[in-house]
Length: 82
Length: 291
Image (cartoon, chains in turn purple, cyan):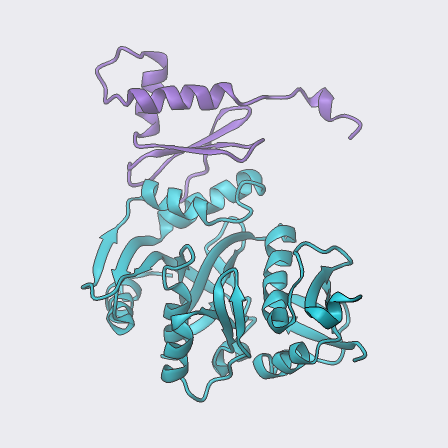
């Protein structure tokens, strides 16, 4: 069964690939993508507890944090009147 | 020459073509014998390929391409006018169609099961496409896969196969009775000839297929067939690089690409002999693919 992508925050979609080869992220405003070679559950664990013993990918995690922080979530009011 | 107006019915699109260049009209008749018509109810695109004007017309004749009076490309040598039209049609669809997730890939089908062949220039994609199309496979597209969002369904967009440089003579030796365009020399892709697909591709140009595999081909001289199964993360990265409008299609585009890599078999193949690769595709890919 196909699983819909999870919404990480208002501007980023994420999806843990079925074969557990990685997780894909998508910035819905800019169209940028990021692929990390870790399942989403481990990434979430890393985000909330960077010192955990789970598999780590320091470069990938900093890429993700940069990716998420670059997402500019504009308030709905900015779109009013367009 | 007065402007010749004709219509190309190339589902899911219809193009109105106006040209004052005799070689363009001749190539249209040669390459699109069944799709070229004299009338249409509602064309999607209005294209003009015309000869340049002024002094240059006499010194160094050129051809210009216009789409709805917009001129996206620089003029080319008049001998390359038909190739300019073909690339212009690609440009129209790739930049303006948002109903589909569009992947830069050849698409071929057998028994209702389609394989996408995304590949950069120089990978031998069009040579492979030509061989398969004339050896029992149905060509849906040589250049772009039109995927219905949220599905694995690919619609045909049957057009000629764009052969470059050495593959031109190879294809002419393989298929001496096929319909080839005149040659466009010294283009940015080198020498280019367009090859009209076989009749079965034209006859079934409204019949969709289900994508069951994504194969990234690479031609290499004197190499044994090398097959590498890609994991889904690798396949996603490679497919996303070849998806024209994936980033513009938003969540729907993203989910469609994710779905494709999860539902399909994904391979990278290096090949020398097309027949050897074709055997792998039939015996090991299509045989085990469910639709």
